[in-house]
Length: 112
Length: 115
Image (cartoon, each protein chain N blue to C red):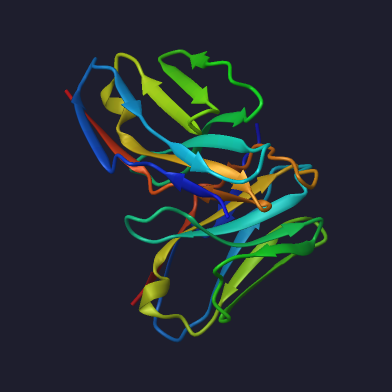
């Protein structure tokens, strides 16, 4: 069975700081898929990114960037120049056994 | 672009009552998932359907049942409600050839409160 670990339960930073959210995925599968979702206070789950295990290229989308390292099974998420609107719970998730398994989530608070 | 539609958005029921949640997947998506998220918890997989057949089952109580209809919409039926069933229920959909990890899109969720 796969396991997703987000070691940081809560992070609080001041606006404009950079912040990195950690995620480690454990699985016996050689091919797997990892995701990040954002859950703002309103409750919906917003898809951010999907990454295949055979693609180790970093990805950047605006202020968001993701770093995947297969050797350490880590899929970290960095927000550059954070903004108050980035405040949310962020979930890392892994695809396995025909379903998505979530980590415990990291509550990110950006203070003005 | 069309998203996953869930109804109702909010629901208040009394203990031992029955509740039904509805989900309309993104057009042309063939797989529907149901997740339950308790307060301060991560979403937990309940059940999924692929091409209208039950695909996988997670930690879904026996009091709950679900199905996917010919138009691909799905319903989650919850009977003999308990206080612990109070949660945010998500429906999600994807176009999912078996074995692949295609992107799964979630609806806005249905908030169920059992009093």
